[in-house]
Length: 193
Image 1 (cartoon, helix red, strand yellow):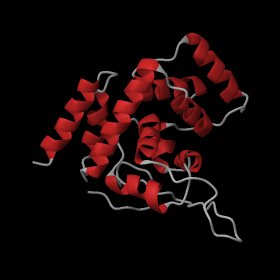
Image 2: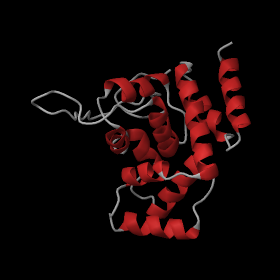
Image 3: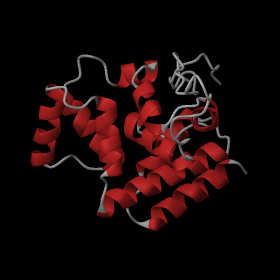
Image 4: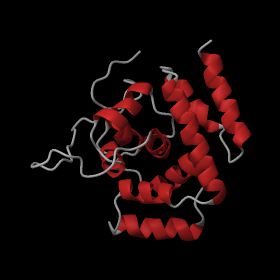
């Protein structure tokens, strides 16, 4: 078992920001935007890390960080786990392809790949905005796959399982078919018995 050290690394198994950011108004001490849902945070884990969130990480980002989903997405790119998965040497094309595979189990079509590559190369979008845009724009089977993966991720986190291998394998067989989600949830229930 790893120890929570303030980073998103699988060795530590917990995902907490290294540099927490606050988004409050000074005069009212109120949050500028809404807290994310468990499903939204799980989608970011799937997109960025290709794994289910752990319990402490999901709880941190949803309830303690005081960040909205866009800020969490941005913060993910400050994490050691992200830097290990996507080092500076990785091309935007490789990053886009990996994100599509993480989210939708497929490579991007050529037009989409070229569109996003151009925008990332020109810094029209940052990688965190790209991920959020891809998540929010999912349609059809892509949306179903993403919803199923994120739902399995929430179930995994809520089961308090600290098995980093299972955090990956629990979503790898998820498809647009609801039966794949049911199978993943059965695997989670079976793990705790």
